[in-house]
Image (cartoon, rainbow, N blue to C red):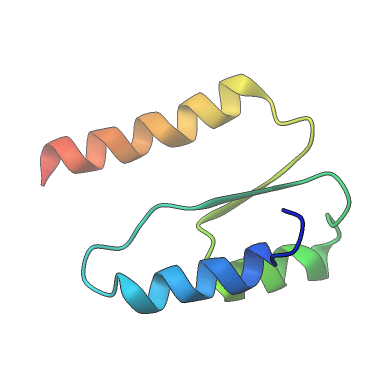
Amino acid sequence: MPGASGHAIAAELRGIYKSARPFMIAISGKWYSASDRLVAMGAGFDHFLEKPADPRELAHLLDGVSQRMAAA
């Protein structure tokens, strides 16, 4: 995201939506070391995927969200 840090945006969204937490997935083609993953999770991302993200893995993560929402 040119001009914006995904970590900063994730942290801001977590601050805005405290009760109805948005589900966020970080997808990066440059930052994918173990420490990069920890930083992303600390910023509030729920999952971290490397580019190119596997569409099946992404679909599986989103399916889990929809199942949790349906059960609520």
